[in-house]
Image (cartoon, rainbow, N blue to C red):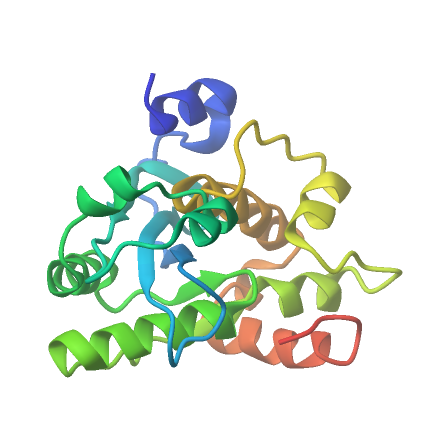
Length: 217
C-alpha cells in the first residue's frame, strides 16, 4: 500500500467532501525536505514531500512526492543520517525537473513547514542554482505558530507537538510522511482559530509572537 493510501485509511476524516456552495478556501501547501546535510550553502536537496490543506481540510489527493537525483551520491556515513540509499538517489528526478514540478504544484499557495527557515533556504538555493527562479510565496513556520497558540510549556520538536495533539504517525523522517504529519498538526492549529484569522498575514503575525513564546526559527 502506498503511503498516501495508508494515510487515507488511517485518517478517513482528513479529506471530507467539499460542502455544496462553499466559498473557495485558501490552499496551503505543507512542505518537508530531505537533504544531504544541514548547510543550505553546501548540501543538496534529496527529496521533496508536500501535501495541500484546502481551508482546514487535509487533501491527501493533492500531494507531491519527489526524489531528487544529486550530482554525486552521498557517502555511506551520510546515507545513515538521512536514510536515502544510493539506488534511491540515482532513481530521483534531476534538480531542474524537481524545481519545475515543485513550482507548478505550489503555484501561488502560501507555504507551511516546521522550521520553515530550513526548507525555505534549501528551496531558494536549489531554484536559484537550477532555474534562476525565486519563491515569493509567503511562508508560515509551524515551530513558531504552535507555541503562539499554545504557549504553556510548549514542545520544541515536531514529535513533541504530534504527541501533544495525539497525532499518531507510523512512519517519520521521510519527506512525504513528515509533510503529512505537519499537515495534520497545521489542521489542528487552524481549528483553534476563528475563520477571520485563517489567512497568511494573520498567521505570520501570530508566528512572530511565537518567536518570544518558546518557538525557534
